[in-house]
Length: 209
Image (cartoon, rainbow, N blue to C red):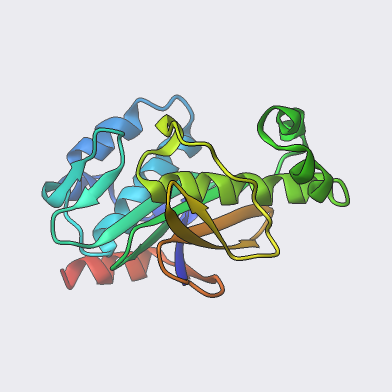
């Protein structure tokens, strides 16, 4: 499955006036971030959504806070580590990207089972973030995210699917420039295909909209 990446250095090349014309509400959200990189990542996510030909007026938010497009396209965004990521298609999907940081390891015992802790033990830092990304992407694909009250099953990254509340979710993951990435969907998505977009790619795609 394709996962589209827009780095902050490319987002900076796109005038704010263009961004406000495309998605004024997201720009207001971006302005609430204190750090410049966080503002750029939030803006980048909005640019990716517009590049996928989803306009702000076509988006509605579910009761759990997940965005959906009125035109029937399923999409999801995530941002971390100076870039934003987007997946979209014809089926329910979720994406998560996490900057790899060993300072996060203290969370492992709070969010993983004994079996999962055993799996990450051979490569603690990398595997912690892989497992974290997989779980987050599945939670986002369910549409309920962290508000989900269902019992979350153990994740075995060697497999490519789990069942959550009676629905099978397939997942794929990878490492990209010191970031873990995972995508989940209700259909088998195969391997991740990471595609970096430039400012020109974004502008040209939006102009064709």
